[in-house]
Amino acid sequence: MSIDIDDFLTTVAGAVAHLQVPVVDLIAVQTSDPYRILVATILSARTKDEVTALAADRLFRLAEDIAALSRLSEERIAKAIYPVGFYKSKARYLKQLPESLQSFNNIIPETIEELVTLPGVGRKTANLVRNVAFHKPAICVDTHVHRIMNIWEYVTTDSPLKTEMVLREKLPEHHWPNVNSLLVAFGQSICRPVSPQCDICPLAGKCPQRGVMPRKNMKKSSPADQKPYRFISWNVNGIRAVEQKGFAEMLLGFDADIIALQETKAQPDQLSPELKNILGYTSYWHSAERKGYSGVAFYSRIEPLAILTGLNEPEFDCEGRVLTLEFSSFYLINIYFPNSADGLKRLDFKLRFNDALLKFADDLRQKKTVVLCGDFNVAHKPIDLKNPAANVKNAGFTPEERAWMDGFVAAGFIDTFRIFNQEAEQYTWWSYRFNARAKNIGWRIDYFCVDAGSLEKVHDAAILKEVMGSDHCPVQLEYLP
Ligand code: SF4
View 1 (cartoon, rainbow, N blue to C red):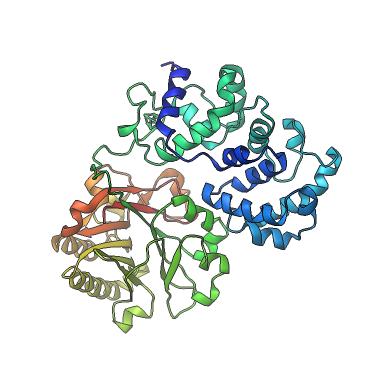
View 2 (tube, rainbow, N blue to C red):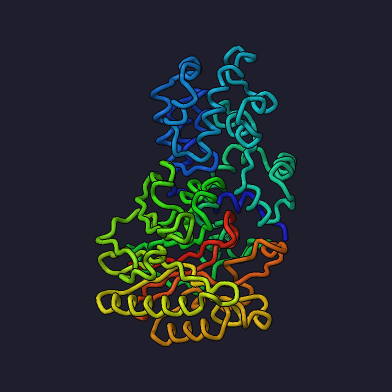
C-alpha cells in the first residue's frame, strides 16, 4: 500500500491545527537568535513543552547570550533549568557550550557536521536548529517522525538515522521544515505510541497501520465538556532505583492527573528534593517502618479533600501498604498487597490483609464511589499468567488468593482492564530472570478496579507495557469524575 504523502501531511496539519505550537518553534517566532533556539532545543529533549518553556525563560533571564552563559556555574545552570529531563547532563553540556563555540568564532554554526560537534547536540537537535534557526533544508527525525513514517509504510527502516536518509531522498522538500512539528503534535495527541486513537483518526481507512495495536474501539464517548482524568498505577520496585532511570521525566511524560506508586521502598527523609518536588504535582507518602521495604505514594495534580493513611490496623499499617485520597465524588485507594512469599509463609497474613482491605473499601463505598489500584500480587484467572498449570501452588496464583479475588468481584468490584480487553498474554509483571520480559512470560497482577457505582465513569483502561524501569509496567485508567 502506497500512501499519498501530500494528502497525509495536509490531513495531519488540519488535525493538529488547534494544538499548541512546539516550544522550539514558539521560541523561533519570538526570536531569530540561534543561541536561544539551540539552547531551547537542547533543553526540550525528553521534556514536556511547558516545562521547557519555563526552564528556557529562567535561563535566558540569567544568560541572554553566550558570553553571559560562560559566566554561570554548572550548578547555577542546573538550578535554573530544573526539572527538564536529564537536567544535570544538560547543565554540563551548556556549561561546555561557550568553550566549544570558540572554534566557530563564538557563533552558532549552520551545518549539521559542525553542529553535532557541540556538547549535547545530536543529529536530531542539529537538524532542528539548522531548520528553525537558519531556515536551511533539514529534516529533523525524532521518535515520532520515525515511528509514524514507518506506520504509514512511507519508509521501512529500523532507526531514526535511516529514516532521515530515506526521507532526504523521498520526501518533497517543501515538507521538510514542518514535518517534525506536525508529526510530534500528531504523535502526542492522536497517533500515540501507546494505544493510538485510530477510532478517531482522520487517516483511518487509508493508513496502513503497520505494526499498530489500536486502542479498543469500546471507549465510551463522553460529554464534550467532560474530560476524563488519567490515573496511572505503577509498582516501581524502589523509587530511588527508578529515579536513576529517569523517573521524573517518565512521570511528566505520563501526563497523568494522578500517579499511584507501590513498593517505593523509601521513607520521606530518604527522598531527594527532585523526587519530592516534581513540577505540577504534590506527593503523598505512606512508608513502611522498616527501611527499604514496601511503601506506597501518590503524585497528584488534583488537590484532595483528605488523605487517609493505612487501614487503621497497626499489623498492616506498619508496612505502608495503603494510602487513600478523597475527592468530592470518589475515593482513590492505592494498595500494595502483601506477597504470599516462598513456601506461602505469608499467605495467612495476606488473606487477613485482603479481608481488612475489602472491609475498608466496602465502608468507603457507602459514602461515595471507589477506585482501587495497585499491585494486587495475584493473577486472578488462568488467562492472567503465562503458565497457570505450573503455578497453582505458587504465591500469587494459589486457590486461596484466587478465591479471595473471586469474592472481591462477587462483592461488586470490577476489574476495569477486562471490560476492554479479553485477550491472553496481557501482563504487567515479568521476572527479571530468564529474559522473561522479552519473551513475554509474565503475570497480570496490577489492576485498576472500581465499585459498581463507578462503572459508568470508566472511560478506558490499558496496560502501558512499553514503559520500562521496573519489573512491573504501569497500568492506566481514564475515569470521568
Ligand atoms: S490510523 Fe491509527 S496508526 Fe494510522 S495514523 Fe491514525 S492513529 Fe496512527
